[in-house]
Length: 239
Image (cartoon, rainbow, N blue to C red):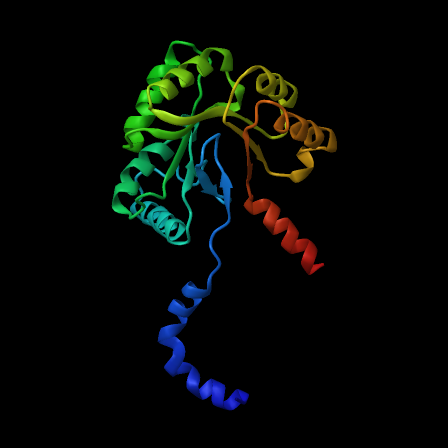
């Protein structure tokens, strides 16, 4: 078929193109979660800043569309935290409006320096999400982890969360992360970075050693793509 005939026939094929693309799309890559048979898509959705939008209707509608497209594309894991302002509240409002049965993997954190406030903070997060239980709970940036990990374990024993762990960000506290992983039985380690160079060779080797030891965890690596970094790359490409 020559180009001219292809172009003349394209309008007749157009209605079938979206279905054709969907039928030929490869299945989403997945990764094992925790110690059982659970798995999650390798790409998750974070809510820091992006879902802390207040009551502006246009902003809320945009976030609803983000969630709809995310689930439609095969996504499942959504990460949040009490530190993220109104993000958990907005998730609790939007999730019931969307079809996600069997796909949502809910992940949030405990984030307080005070021992006594941890349990109440977790209860509030569960209420805001509107879920019967969480899939993953983390101690945010290792803040007061010695007090909060026992609380997460109690929730796990009660069936209120499936997997527990810790998080760290911006290339910090890796020595302490190693100590925790070697002393505690955890399911998930979340590492948040805006730059792969933050994980230097020594940290990559250490992470490999810990993973291959007797306490394996999911290395949940989150990379934040910042607008400014993208604009810098565009300027470099133009020069």
